Image (cartoon, rainbow, N blue to C red):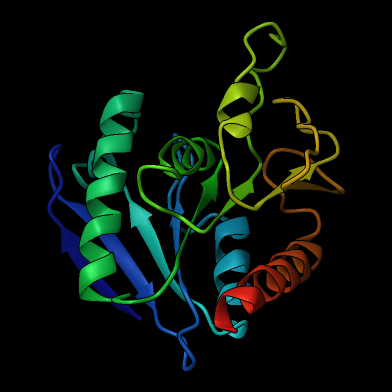
Length: 204
């Protein structure tokens, strides 16, 4: 594991790098709004990707690196994320396809930036479809805007809502809530198998 700082338009971000032996692709994973990169689902997804031969960069957004808990505005998060993806794409993952991902708020960032960042796929852990109790404030358009293969792993009792499947979007429901802590092994297996499957055509 290696930790490195990355300059962004909104201050330094931090990337914790877990480099696999094979290096089939690079997976960038972002944290939730008020949490860090040590969330159980992010740790499980990192282990799954590593075992599937995928390099992983766990990304701490600049506001977290600066010690703030309140998240930055969406435009700042997206701009920082794209700067991080470009930097790591050159420095660490040169020539490799990039998969964008994250949990909750980080999943939203991954979706919104997937086209501009030329991601080959998107991994969403606990995508917050709407604020709890406010289904009218839907963020489903962010998911719908993704044009590459997408996996959404969601807790069956997530108060932030349940996303819908689509022609290039798989939704896997696991026991539990927004934390996805109830079935870590199920999450690990799901992420591992999906990454292995979607990357195989790119290796031909």
